[in-house]
Image 1 (cartoon, rainbow, N blue to C red):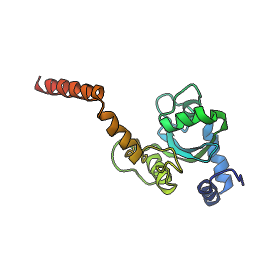
Image 2 (image 1 turned 30 degrees about the vertical axis):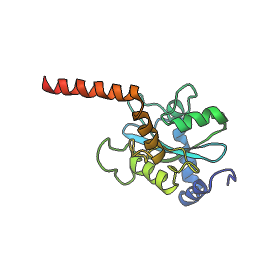
Image 3 (image 1 turned 135 degrees about the horizontal axis):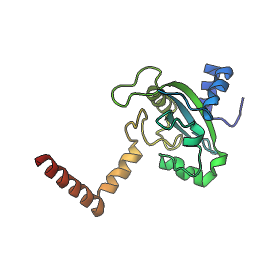
Image 4 (image 1 turned 90 degrees about the vertical axis):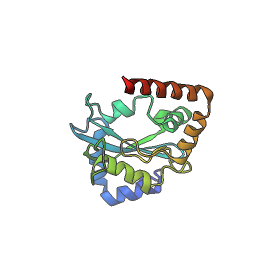
Length: 178
């Protein structure tokens, strides 16, 4: 019973049991297996959480190699900034689920990594900046949060971004004609 863990994480551990939680932690150092993945939570020193997923992939890397290597930039800018602010070594990393890799397209299947990631992000309200660092609803990308959408809208107003989009649209139109 770690008093520093956020309440939702403690409640989840109580639900699945400490034995299962300990068993899941092997996937920090061990690849999840072909066609398999893990859902994890990273907890900052101020108890803000980020839920994500790691799948076996072509390289067959462990969670530690792909998500805990300080030299690699994590996909989420909030996590990256938080690593720099508090120090990577001050984060708690917990594997929450091991199961089938989520499908790239279509609805999540019960128990696959997409479904579980979406569940944790929604159930723990991790799109809310006061609680979490997630910018998307999860499940192989997911819908952007309101904060992320606002940042994208603001970026699209910059002339250099509009010009890039205009050039891309022209190139695609010319490609479609050919």
